[in-house]
Image (cartoon, rainbow, N blue to C red; front, side, top):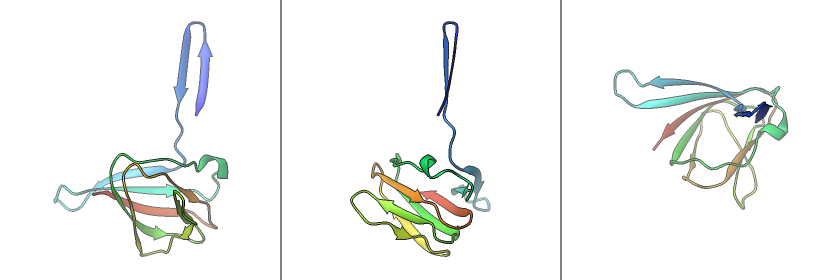
Length: 107
């Protein structure tokens, strides 16, 4: 988060550790989020967090990236596999050797 303050004004800007593109599956109304996490990102930016909905994560590109769920050891994110994250469950990603690209579906 970036914090600016001036005379009687405070602005907080949250900077996400990824870029994302929203897409729809060919006229079905089914929405996906495509996210790319750069290998150049600082480890400290990949924080524990919770999501408001259940999610299916499909890995499109990964080399050494890991997913760690609350109270569990990290598991490697394998290209082509799906992973499920239950809403309001703490989790984080751990940086690998190249960019991580995932497709996220709220389920």
